[in-house]
Image (cartoon, rainbow, N blue to C red; front, side):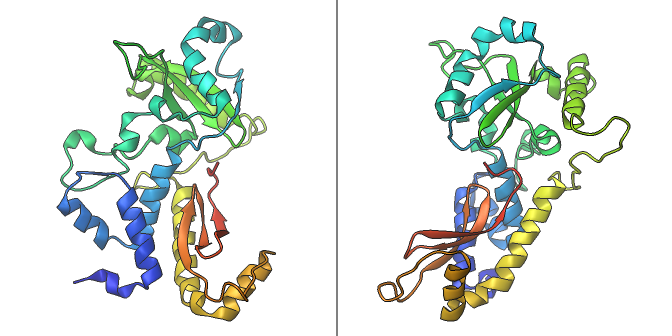
Length: 287
């Protein structure tokens, strides 16, 4: 049964874009068939979770959170951190410092090697909002610049905030390093909460995805279902332009070419005829 027949041509094109761009494990015909059979909301959620792990290239200032890193620690690791932080300041690509799984495991499906399970879920990013970066100076013997040291940072629009410096012990359950690291994470999340006030930190669904990402996915899916039939109505399209205060010379452009689109973590409608993007929703983690 071809489930794609239930979708409009625009939604089908959007689904193909997500499927074609989302790296999957295993990368074979069986996993492709599984993805094609997925509901659109599930594809969107997987895509969002993958895109959250990537860092848009942009110049950012570097700051150190004093609750997780002491001035002495900054001084001691200055040379180790230099290659990464210089790239941050210059707005260069930080992907080489991310986990190699980012470009391989956008989604892990049935048939994957047991060691790959949950490789698409970065739980530290999901629960604490922190990316982790491998730091070392590239060399002939170490071309990827990998070491045992990790920088955990919150990547904001214009700021790269280093919250902790650790090692892979931060991921090993029950170790002293993980206990120390998680204490820093919890303190960082609670830094703006008044003393004694309870709070719920980034709830995680049974799927391993954050509640916020799941709600964002649901909102995108619902908006697409509601608005897609209206995109063939010239009156609605004209209203779309007017409501967003965008001038459109209808005498020259008689027919729009509308498509559903993600631009980083902003979801909306892209008119290919005018190169105008109408943002409907922006995820909390969009840079």
